[in-house]
Image (cartoon, rainbow over all chains, first blue to last red; front, side, top):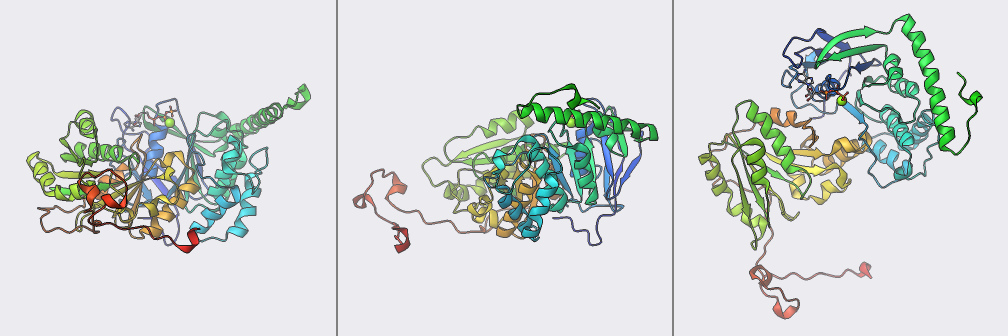
Amino acid sequence: MILNIPDGLRSVTILGGTDKFGAPEPVPSVELRPGDALALVGPTGSGKSELLSDIEQLALGDTVSGRHVLVNGDAAPPTATGLVATLSQRTNFVMDATVARFVTLHAESRGKDARALLPRVLETANTLCGEAVRASDPLQMLSGGQARALMIADIALISAAPVVLIDEVENAGIHKFRALEVLTDSHKIVVTATHDPVLMLMNAKRLVMRSGGMNRLVEVSGQEAECAESLRRIDEVMLHARERLRMGETLTPEDISL
Amino acid sequence: MKLVTVAGAPSVGKTSVILHLAALLAKEGVRPAVVKFDALSSADDVIFREKLGIPALVGLSDYVCPDHYYVSNIEEACVWGREAGADLLVLETAGLCHRCAPHIKGVPALTVLDSLGGVDAPRKMGPAASLADIIVVTKCDLVSQAEREVFDFAVASVNPTAAIVHVNGLTGTGALHLQRMARTWPRVDGVEDAVLRYSMPASICSYCTGERRIGRRYQSGNVEKLVVAKEAA
Ligand SMILES: Nc1ncnc2c1ncn2[C@@H]1O[C@H](COP(=O)(O)OP(=O)(O)OP(=O)(O)O)[C@@H](O)[C@H]1O
Ligand SMILES: [Mg+2]
């Protein structure tokens, strides 16, 4: 059953369960509202993907973690779907179509005006990556970065899902900060599992995972916001250098000065 | 005993969907059992026994039409399931032609579709897709969110009332929704007098009895000829 929230999504609440050792999770609950961005951080195996899966399946105390995920403060119907859009390293385009045809099909399936949306989706995608995505490009010819950029623009502007779960979309060659902004600007709740320090600090809050449990909820401090700014510049320089070298150009120290 | 029919083209992921569901159900004390109907060969019974330790049986139709073979053996499958002590019997069918559906009125009906199969896949599955109660879409983790939504739309346009469930065959994410549904499935005491949701095509011609030669001379019984439309030329 497609989850139908008549008055819109106001909040998603994660109520803590137990960690891998059966101990209660130190963070008892996390509440997210439209426009919120949360990073999940922690070493490999600490339970980031498991938490994303709990949100995706709207856990009712019936997953390994024993967590509950509430929608607008209440348990969702047990078989509700359609709440989340997901993006992971494994996600690809499989359709044999041009970008224009693809956007049109998606817009039409959602009962939206494809003509009006296509230029907006392209414009947004093109703020996210270096090489321009064109309406006539076949999906299969897009670079990894272009494909990610298009997927994010499409989720932000066309997808119905109010929650976006991102698992490890790093080094895809896109402007991560803009990507997050595009999604939160369209009032999505964005939860990103990541090992990337730039991405971690771009989220106003981060949830530290340890041994399968929600260990600590940290808000970005003023000092960290400054660090985020510096890290972002480093990241932009890396992206710039990467694009130049990929395009066969040469690099000078000026090109990569911070 | 509860009963569910599971349909889907070869290799769409029926067995892994059933494996994940059965594993979840087994954890809450339900005893699942599986009968796999196939045409030529299947090692699925070994997979179910070895991976989950649950009773499993394979029925091969061999030279008989697989759909007719399936219908002719539903009762026998149920008797076997009850004797095996099953609380939930899964009737999995593969190798069926897309003209048919194994689904039975009053018995939960699940059809598995592969999201890599393209937007025409739901239509091509015919009655198996249009008459199912639940459509499970697999391999969703491999396709973009947009393609997932377009695929769901294609499913809804052939079957507006089916519940659509996305299951990741590798991790099992999504099988939880099936488990929650399975709790509400009715008990079925017997299938005698139960009715298929869709009729099966006639197949009583010389080829049904082993004829292999091509040509009008060798054809007898129920033979339909292709009508060539003017537009074809
Ligand atoms: N609360 C929990 N209770 C029991 N098991 C858990 C819990 N959280 C996670 N696990 C299990 O721990 C294992 C590793 O978790 P997971 O894959 O979520 O880690 P991860 O942080 O995503 O790692 P990576 O950084 O490598 O992606 C999984 O098998 C998962 O099912
Ligand atoms: Mg992970």
